[in-house]
Image (tube, rainbow, N blue to C red; front, side):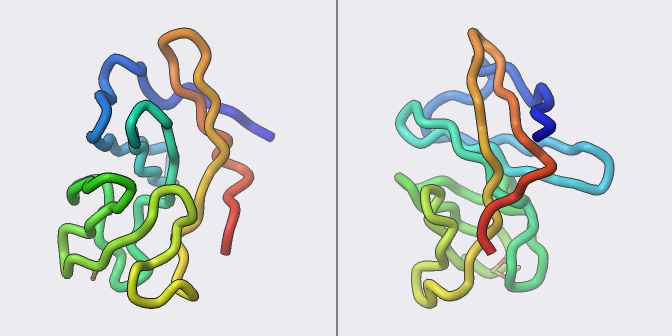
Amino acid sequence: MAFVRAALLARLAPGTMLEYRNGEQQVALCNVNGEIRALDNHCPHRGGPLAQGALHGVMVVCPWHAWEFDCITGACDFNPEIVVRQYPVRVEGDEIFVDIDSAGTP
Ligand code: FES
C-alpha cells in the first residue's frame, strides 16, 4: 500500500472530477454525492482522459467518444465486461489520498 496525497477535498466539489498525475500514472478523482472515488484516467476504449469528461450522477462520460463508466464499479454501461481500474481512496481531514500501487479490477 502506498497512499499518496492526491488533492484537497475543497477542490473536488460534489458532481465534479479532477485529474491527479503521479509520474506515468493518471487518476480520475470523482466526487459522487460526497463519496470520493478514484479511477484510472485512461479510458479502456482508446485512452481518452476520463477526468476531462463529464460526471452524470455515478456515471463518468469519456470526453472522446462518450462511453460511460460507473464510478462505483468501474463497469462500462453497455458492456459490463469492460471495466476501468479503480484505486483505493482515503479522505483524512481536507485531503484526499489514493493508493496508487494497488489498482483494483480488472
Ligand atoms: S476513448 Fe473513451 S470513449 Fe473512446
